[in-house]
Length: 300
Image 1 (cartoon, one colour):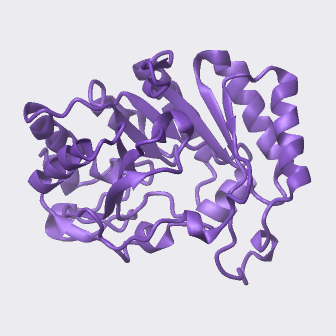
Image 2 (cartoon, one colour):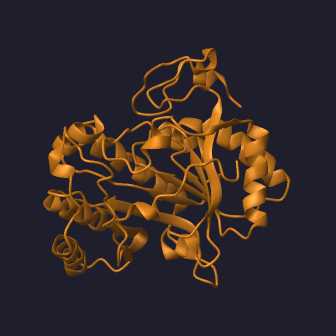
């Protein structure tokens, strides 16, 4: 692992300059020790990612974004997870392949890019053949993404905000759209146009997710329009309705509700109306806590 990167860490756009090799934790809540909260087959990703067999998800502890409404807050705040070696991470990749996973799905991985590269080098030498999915918030530095070229087959970023106001208010980064737009451009450059195997499982490409927040329907429309105007059918757009207020939010009471069926349908209709065809929508009761996995160390 290239530990030099972590002595003055600027891997993410926060650029907090923490010396993670000295045991200090960055904004992401991570030192140089690799911490993983769960590694298991996951059935609730987009159909071309999970398929029938499941996606081999590895949930990393910590996060460089830190949204106030995060559904996985127990791990993004660094409160859950087990310290493991890079060699163990490589073993986990191979174990997930042995369980029939359709891919290796790295969830919130940006602060562990050097560790992941070394683990992939090891596991590839030992027989890993699955596509690798980089599942992230979109708040990524292009320089870090360039390190992953040739390692990642599928990019699965969020594009959370276009407006500065909610980005600053809920994620503490008014530059979110500017940073994420550049990151997605780099992801599309690397992954290219989507391709699928005979079962319809994605082998390479980009799916951009957008989670609709209560009260921000117009911002959501602007995001969908930006993605379609910029990339057309070169990417897939996943329009998500699963925002879940886990507990009452006293600081941001406007977030204490799910989006309505009417709001979501209006957004989907808007996407269809402007020409989006390569997309995913959610149906049924996706905004339930039962869809949030237990971060109990399974598979770690």
